[in-house]
Length: 358
Image 1 (spheres, rainbow, N blue to C red):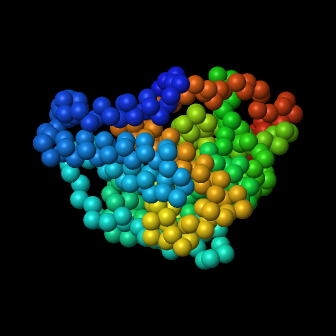
Image 2 (cartoon, helix red, strand yellow):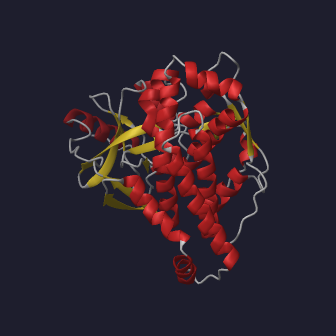
Image 3 (cartoon, one colour):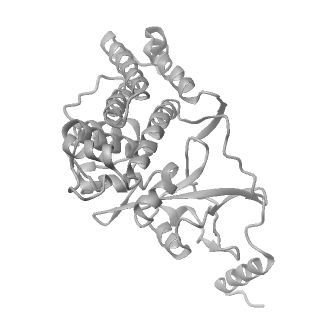
């Protein structure tokens, strides 16, 4: 996907400024006219109203405490995803329910142990958004159950907080460091969050990794080097700061399942929103009395969701990676990925594999 970097001192405002253009009738008519599609008044009002309401919910959530901010953001996210889905499909979509339910964690468990079960793949909101906003062919109800912790562990922006609260066993994301060597882009896996052996094992759970990358190499600096095959595709994604990362598959009925990034955010917002709306007996004491640090992680998640979800929707509309930031992630690593001795060994190994002998 094409990357467009936009310098911005107020990223959230600039992102919403771009999204709110789709609340104007003439802009919507031009959008559909450029796509050579018909548009009626109901569709225009649905898109315009949904995005306008989303903006209001997101704005109000900034001044709300953790008691209600997840609920406000979930309502805002629902409106935003619905409006963008109608925009891209060109129809007023039918949604009958959330398409998911939660089972709160037990009294002494962490909030992140909350379980999510998906339902209604036809008219459930979460399934409709997956189908409308991506080309992923996946039936969510068939992926078994998920936990909030699994979804949080898939977000690169909160890795340090996640590890502090839950350890690294449930991490499903690997941050990368891009570098250039011989005029080609490669990636180093940043060691520290996981041990080397565990990282090498996690890499095996990245869907299509073997089809697109050469076998990972461990250099003398204890870094894992990733090189794309000549005809392979890059599988990494970018955070809103430009940080590259790989998403690790979740084992669901013997399949490695990776959800689109916006869906991890949306599912967690639904879970927290449901807890604070329908389970105050669980949510209120957590917000008031948590002494584990989990509350701090959730507050950070709320901030990231408010910043990133609109950005991700803008990316989907225009099929670009928009990076709004005043302090971009910089690719400054130009070191050689391997030393001379390691390169010599690799050459010998490759020649031996080809049955070429010195």
